[in-house]
Length: 227
Image (cartoon, rainbow, N blue to C red):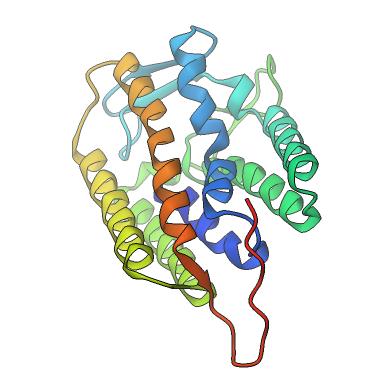
């Protein structure tokens, strides 16, 4: 899943309005942001295998340290505790921890059975939504639209930067999603390098989110925005 992970990051702004959207997005994408480095270091493995599923040509041979259920829970706890220690925002800590865990849930829905429960265990799981391109696009597209709807009902642009920056980001995500539907990566290294490039989204997200403010009914106090 790709834009679906961004969808839950957008929607989480309502649950933790004081948390920067950039932080929420890092949480929702955390294991995918770490995974490329593990691939480049040889700790985890992926190979190009056209036809592996209808939706993606990637065969995730081994990624227990980022994508097994147990390790995702560890990543979630670590990220939530680190956020709590840095900001003191308890609700935000619970939300970012839940976002990290949500990544495994959404991957479990989309992946074929390649997700381990614990590192080293033979059993693998996955519901295999990726076996159907139309079903994947419909489910992920609906999730993305819902996430955007929640974010737009929770925040409003305070200036042009908050509007143009937001919509340009949404358009970029959709273009990348469409491009990935028709392209086969040249190598696993290219996949990993492209995955690391996703970190470039973080300052962009932080920028447009700083130029937006909470949408509140008349007479309601606006929530304080934190990092």
